[in-house]
Length: 339
Image (cartoon, rainbow, N blue to C red; front, top):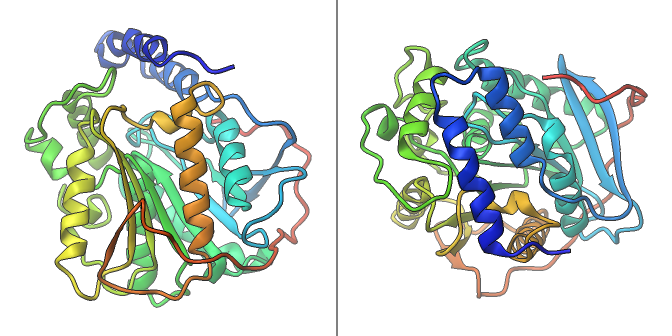
């Protein structure tokens, strides 16, 4: 049953004092963030398995009886939370919606968070996971990297590192409400917006916690400052009320000016808030956005790469294809991994 949009927005606004308070413990904030991110209601037939790859606990999410759009490629989805909060545990219902609409199996890594593990711990651990994929029977060239908020920034930073290290490139990248430029936050230059819970002040606090003294313009932390030559196609969804919408807009402008940049399918939601897709199964607008995102990602898995154009979402995307991929290492029958 869909919840009215004003009610969802009110509930998110109620979380703002907790997330912004300096008196609330980090553990309590992580619990609150998981509650917010875990508000999605999983579709029927969702299946969750668990394992450890390259030292990272992972959840493997698929949906029974869903017709695969890509022959079941693999989506590595990186949760949001500003590098400080968030968990794959909270994202698994949302990931099931992505699996249903993309026809892909979704892999949710439990990457390390700050302040316990500041930059570049998360990026390094995820690159190790990517290198380990062939041992699981997964062809990296039919993998897509995706995420929201900090996870979207990590997905783009991973792709830049993969390219620069000469590793096999993923088929596509997906970003929802991407956080791509921490220098704007460290310098307190991010403009305010009307998001119900996420603010520039919170972004500044999380950026400083994550960086731990590193240069905020370093590409691994702020991939907006990198060059995007030879990257695979990218899907970008961003929201007008979100303070991070300026990062998405700056990214699109930079791609448009670069003839060797990737093909991008961009979609703006002017009246929506930060990472509203996470309310899939509860909010009609989120259901529609996740379906659109998943289908766009699926359409790019085997699409020939065309560089330098930004494609409006109302323009048809290319066809679908691919083959089924499975993890060949036995999946441990374990409980949900801890943060």
